[in-house]
Length: 325
Ligand code: GLV
Image (tube, rainbow, N blue to C red):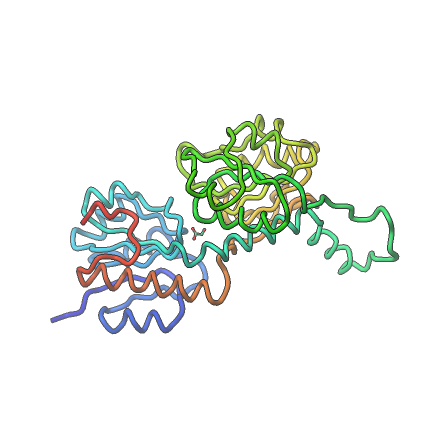
């Protein structure tokens, strides 16, 4: 009997590709860049499963094109806004993601961004590399204190909570807003549930940890920046479109806020001509919050296991839409 056919849309840790090869015929897209839409559709015709990335749009057209034998969509990421989940659910296709293994790593990276923006690390590093460092100066590169400041976390899920735990170590006051109040977590950590506006007005650092949805699209725009402290810093390690990029640029340029640390942008990748890249008070890294050796290995493992389980009819290890079962 022929093996099931699967498409893997980018290289992952080779051990886990080999694992998939033990049960399936694997078509691996080896380029650094994502397959074009045309190639993605062409390669997915007749497949039993796909291991995809957040750069692959998995919608009804994709599912129609793949065919009714498609048994699993396994995403190597915790977020899945590139996948039409209700469409997959209607068709009985389980969708896997890679939560938990990246939670602490992503929280660490959030802190790296927060601290870089607050203490002007990337800006002053550029200054040193340019050969501009001539002397120690009492008024050079003055940043914002982190210890004892107030952090406002928007989205108190797994990553938001890990960010809060680290804030505790800095002796910070922790505010949070989420559509669900998390009293269970408030019992574990001294943090205060406040409304959305209060997070904006009272925080020195506003850190975003929401999913991207219709409700959170441009959640932070011009009027939100106007409410924030002029000394405040916005950190986004969630999804680029949660922030209105033009409004962010204006807020940083006009001094409505003091700085920003971004793991994600809108669009991704950000164009090298984007005006945000001209601003010294904006730290931008290329969506790398979960990028450590250990975490990406674990993400490779879980996404491969989800793919294998899906094509062999076993429940996924981590399933976004368990109602298909
Ligand atoms: C990365 O952004 C992820 O969702 O894992």
